[in-house]
Length: 277
Image (tube, rainbow, N blue to C red; front, side, top):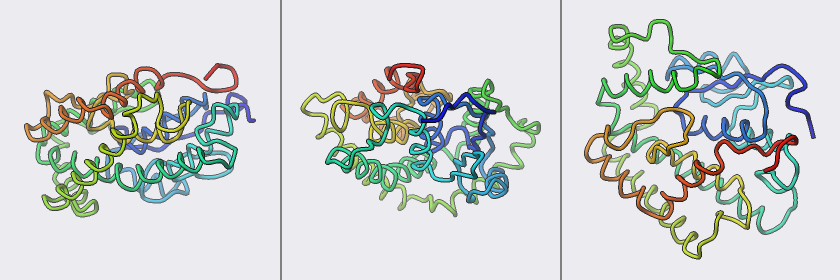
């Protein structure tokens, strides 16, 4: 087991409100791994990610051994700094580990893109709302070394945003038909989690917090805006009416309450070698 405090902080390249970045951030925070967050606006993130040895997407964790450019790999990296009994992925090749890995993969493939497409479909048309979200999210992690770009004012944002919005819609295939398909995937994942929680279990697999729990909570967070999320997210009251209706309904389901509880009880809990899990 390594000592996360033995050397200089690592560098985590993010878009601050990205749910995949939050997934990586949570795992590193939980393991007590020191890092500096280098946060960027969409489009501006691509070149730093490539220069760091990653892809055009974030998160990218820059370590002394090279870049780790997948959120699941960052979870596994963080596991090296916690006792085995508190690892997000069990070291034992048993049924529970296989179930955690299968759920984590499903959430990455289905929930993550669906959450992003549904949220952006409703939020991208609102330039003022986007300005508030982006500026607020940078201020939310300012203590971690992030700050809004020097040009982040209303005038320059109005020049940047139409270009960014057009590229994001094309790259992420954000349109009405895509958003409707994503709502279906979102519904299927929430139904599956609701069913799993029917027996009153505290976690999705077994009797301890795992990568499945962290991944579900982090990837659902942009819609549910849990209270203890480290980055300010748009509350339901600030959302367009159709999206607000969806968010309020999801919040009222067992899976929505589960996300709120995990953020309340687990988000700022340490599992590193110097603290209990």
